[in-house]
Image (spheres, helix red, strand yellow):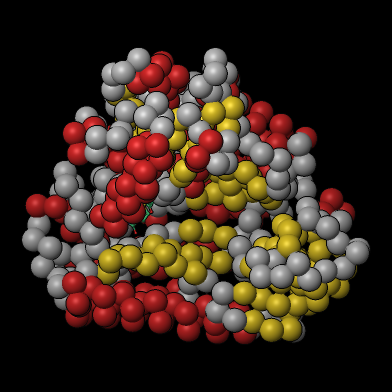
Length: 453
Ligand code: SAH
Ligand code: SF4
Ligand code: F3S
């Protein structure tokens, strides 16, 4: 095959990043090679996100850029993958004439065939959702590195009223535990040091079929046992079903990170109900308190939406109150964006843009202040850091992260290299970054043994 160079861009969440690796795995099995240069590509793919209006706008902008390349090179195939492909289906081809291929998240196996359809002059469209597809047997294309993502489940059954994901990703389904563990083993053998298990709601992971059937806590424990020098992270946890068993599992394994991303969305019970989040703030706060007892030093991050329909000033204040009560280490904060097809879309989007912006800014300011204060408390303390590489700003510094997912910067030292776990004495902190000095290598096996002994 001569037209075999594929270029791909990925937007949206980590699940999309993981899907891109699956897509490239599938394409490579079919004779394609990957290029990082869009001008050199025969096929340009965009793996897209629909979560908010501005996510889609960005992608329309990118498709405009690719039109310029296609004008010069009419044989170029442009394909849209992911959530926007699933949401808009063949409308995408009508709206954007340059789009030749539209493939939703459950039809990536058909991508080579659908690209061929496009090479033959038709539109290649595959947007069926599946109840069973998990790409269990596909080996994702991963460059060598230290960190990897593994999707352990797909879809979402929660139907939060603001969210498109249940529509773009379909029903919840889990991969087999055996296949996930096998993947962790292969990554460990390749020298990876951190694996993040992914799902929209990992707490409902459930492997019913394979010989080693189990829930998410079982999966996490099994992954942690593969190699004590490989850190295990996971995201996202829904507050409704974060079990005690899961909390104990995190506390019992030194290489399962003491970090829980636990989206709260709002501090008001009335809004939470309208969002169909299925928990109250009281339940949420009790959960945080329990987790802190079971896992000393655990840190939390969250997602918050400002300006959901009918949100009053009082509701907004309750959100700020929850932030003060939990003191999150970090947060992803968004303005509510109405999404067609969701239940909330039928409610009036009655909080003005100006109010949404003002509330969001207050939420961001408060989070920055809290992150700053929490990080200041670490000055003078020693943290264990997994070194990842040079810092973004300077090759005189190395960058890594703590178990609680905080970025730490240390001066380059010939005793340390990427992939090492080191001790760092923190001497300065901003709201986003800790700065410190190397104070010794960590021998993880010994540390975990000494914990047991
Ligand atoms: N499954 C995860 C998150 C999925 S989307 C969970 O349940 O937490 C990531 C975040 O995007 C959500 O937590 C929410 O805060 C935000 N989000 C989703 N839909 C949105 C919308 N319509 N407008 C604004 N933010 C939204
Ligand atoms: Fe969306 Fe809610 Fe599912 Fe998260 S749990 S993906 S916010 S529907
Ligand atoms: Fe976006 Fe789809 Fe992820 S809508 S956030 S890419 S699941």
